[in-house]
Amino acid sequence: MVRTRFAPSPTGFLHIGGLRTALFSYLFARHNGGIFILRIEDTDRTRYIEEAMTDIMESLKWVGIEWDEGPDIGGPYAPYKQSERKDIYLQHAEELIKRGNAYKCFCSQERLEKLREEQRKRGEKIGYDRHCRNLSEEDIKRYESENKPYVIRLKAPLSGETNFNDLIRGKITVSNETLDDIVLIKSDGFPTYHLANIVDDHLMRITHVIRGEEWISSTPKHVILYQSFGWEPPFFAHVPVILAPGGGKLSKRHGATTVKEFREKGYLSEAVLNFIALLGWSYDDKTEIFSMEDLIKYFTIEKINKASAVFSYDKLDWYNGVYIRKKSPEELLELGKPFIIKADLLTEDEIEANRDYLLKIIPLIQERIKLLSEIPEKIWFFFDRHFEIREKKELVPKGLDISQALDLLKKARKGLEKIETFTKDNIEEFIRGLMEETGFKTKQIFMPLRVAVTGTRVSPGLFETMEVLGKKRVLDRISKAIYYLEDRKSLE
Ligand code: GLU
Figure 1 (spheres, protein in one colour):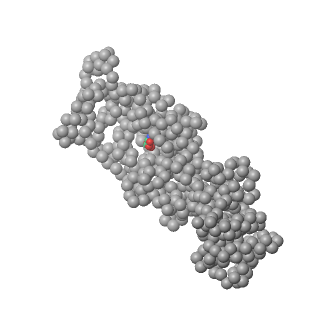
Figure 2 (cartoon, protein in one colour):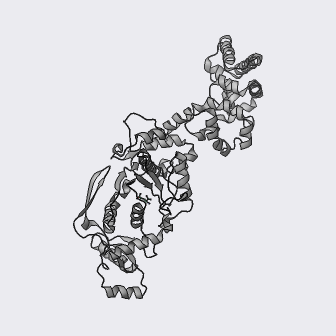
Figure 3 (tube, helix red, strand yellow):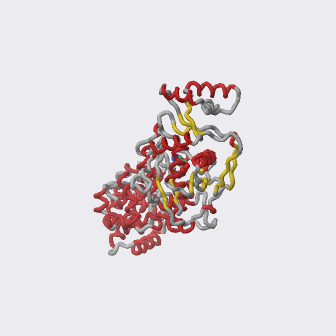
């Protein structure tokens, strides 16, 4: 039975790279009919951030990653929060001491600092000199009776080599001489990442550890820990790092990096999911659109790349457009709601009251937006409360003078008023007629009308827009534009 886990440390909002790692773990479990676990690794109290755990859970759920065991729902190996498992780690560290594979180290902070300082001066590798590795029984007893603070360290093998078979990178070997006697329990009684991580992976019966490549150098230490306990290590798969568009680490200066930021910018969860799935994994090098079901069906570790993945905001935007266009107007309205409210365009009640109107507006902009956050700026002019002609000068396009523009708008008002059923086709027929009658170019006719009814030069298709706005609004707005042109002063 496959059991995988995502084991984030709650040190900040979930990064898009973390989400990708979680996804690969999740997909591998689901593809193999296994179990996916969420475990919170919160033993580093200095970096702990209160809201992080909620954010991690919300972010995972947002893209549809659901865990079978976790801190909120429990499970057979609960608790799933390491801060609640402190005693377990301590017992295990003591067990290692009994086995002769770990020891108490009473070295003071000052001694360690001095040691590092000297190593630095001599240009040596920085590391613990194993001073307490062979303390006599008496010394240990004495220090204990003096209540001298201590840490527990692993007795790493001094010679030979350690290797493991990474499912993505193949065999990895390190010489044991390069390894340190790492700390397992800190002086405050909290375990280090290494100890807690492997004890839990073992006790929670994790079969496959799928994690970011940055952990690969920790893995030999973990393998030694497994051996020291006499346990069988799980399989390891280290997934490639995600680089920023121009190389280097993806950071704030490139754009959004946390899942929360992507959500707030108006990315759809399906787009983010699809995009990150292909950061370091591919199915056949051509298929680009994958739903969660597809991913579960096709995901295998063999198809994970060794090479780093490069993040592309353009590609993500493209995906977002694709998924936005797949939505029904109802769905898109629902998704756009928080953005409309946040932009102070409409209140929740106003959205309800204008529901039918909005459902006609949405299809007009659906093809034109890449982000949900663009919705307010694309639809503001449909609402009288916000409407104004923002670019009054544009009522008079190049090639026309004020009186020609006035004449045109007056003719348009008169003609539009006569249209009984105010549909896009009827509007178009009339405007085409007007073009012939006046002999003006398309742009010269469209521009004054567009600016008059939408307030700016860029808008969805003019005829559709007029139909949705409705006859009364269109006529009122044209009248207002006529007023501005007659007034002249307002054009300045
Ligand atoms: N807590 C570690 C992290 O924050 C987990 C690494 C691992 O998956 O072993 O990434």
